[in-house]
Length: 220
Image (cartoon, rainbow, N blue to C red; front, side, top):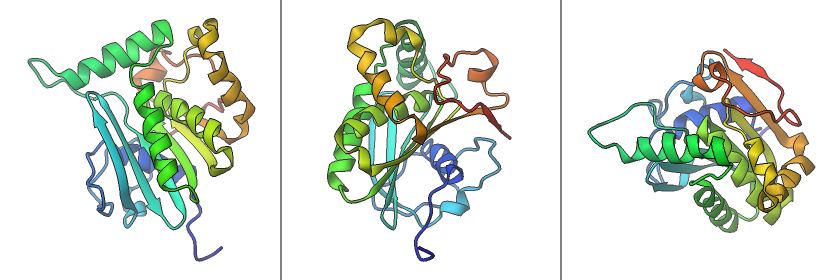
């Protein structure tokens, strides 16, 4: 339909960057509301999108952006810098949500991501759902996708992660989480993971092997 916007991974890359800024529900996207993910895409390509919902807790942030009959759920990655003397957001991101997640497969923010997803999908039950996230946000996007695909799989059109933390393999060792992998694998054709050149997650190989949907394309 030439009168409606077709969502691309470029849009999802922009949305993943935009969500590093605290957004105001009901506002329109502005040109200065993002950080760069080195994708070459510019935030002004999404100017006019409406912020319909957000959720924020210690270290966790998610936004829901709307255009036409499309909703993009975007999850923020780990906080880039430390603001002392005690930065609870940074500690909860890098220690509890990242390091603990890699070691155990347990994400301290996964429940928040799933609950936010369920709320938005209930509020916009007739909309197309797109899910994205960068770094830690990539892991949260996968957890979000599990809830979305369990709830209304026909609504979910695309899940794109940008140098995402992925779903740590240790999670598969615990029967409790095996279902998450089965759900994601069942719908693997809608998943794309992009690696960003120079990003610490790529440099230090923190992202676990999830080649059943990983296309390993470097975004420059």
